[in-house]
Length: 448
Image 1 (cartoon, rainbow, N blue to C red):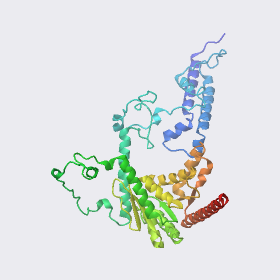
Image 2: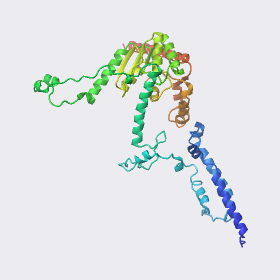
Image 3: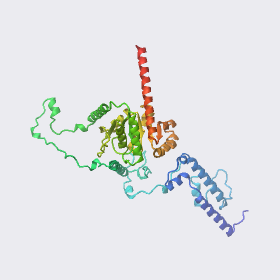
Image 4: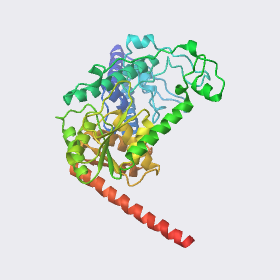
């Protein structure tokens, strides 16, 4: 027979149970919860092994709770085969949930980890439900932006507006740092003049020429239709090809428009362009301030062709004063084609989304076999270290890219190394083109 428990024994058992609860509460939380609650990003090796660390922490917490709970009331009772023991305390039940059955599974982060929403975001949270019903309701899910805000249309529209404003701000800052007045702050040269047409003098059209030249009634603006845009895009291609047809050795240099002349990156870009210009290369940029201005300035110092491919923006960007040949584009795709077609390689200095766009555009074309022997040089090891580390620990580890894709990029801090890499690639391209010409001529002789 089991002996009756005395009041002192019951008090001792209750104290042991409370100590066990305290030990479980003090047990280390899983890795992903500690990282999220601390608000800091973990290092890449920890990210790669986050699942293993979580399972180990969970097993350690389970062992501690089992050892500490052995002194709780009812711990000495045996459990019949095929039956599961019940946790006797609320903390023990909470510890039992999500330990044994969920080991190795991905558990959602607790709600306390998610940052609180501002009142203006809560007011605009309703976005409607999915028509098919297969997608979750946007009002109740946890979709977030990279900045941690709720991904609502209002938040995205505000971010787009701020991005445009900041683009104009940093572009103007590049002009100001160079000692120039931004185009948006200059007074207009003259006011636009509208021509008045007396519609009473127009006669009904008779011939096709009259229909073409004198269309009566309300005229539709056909210049805003897609067929006309196709002609305009074609015209931009023709203009770009016509102006840049004489460029045989070109290098495109990209970077932030916000960089001032005192910045080391500005000086490095200027020196790199000067060295390449002395080797007979044409320097091609986006024609703006900052790194682009530095590259065009270096080309002029070397007496090399200084080319600027400007793009139409919501505000007037203005070309830097060191551009000798300026081409204005309306469409990014035409401008991108000119950068790739007339360049031996790309040199990427520290910059923003536009710089990253040109970087990954070139890498994609190399990866898909559209261009080859095309060096992509990342200038500034410290600036690009985080991106390269992320590519290594995420894209390569998860097999989104192959390990060899990382070798498509070159890292340097030396203008001479960058110029030497471009020169070497140019010699490889010319040698490969010469060998291809010899093979083609030989095959033509065989066919004849």
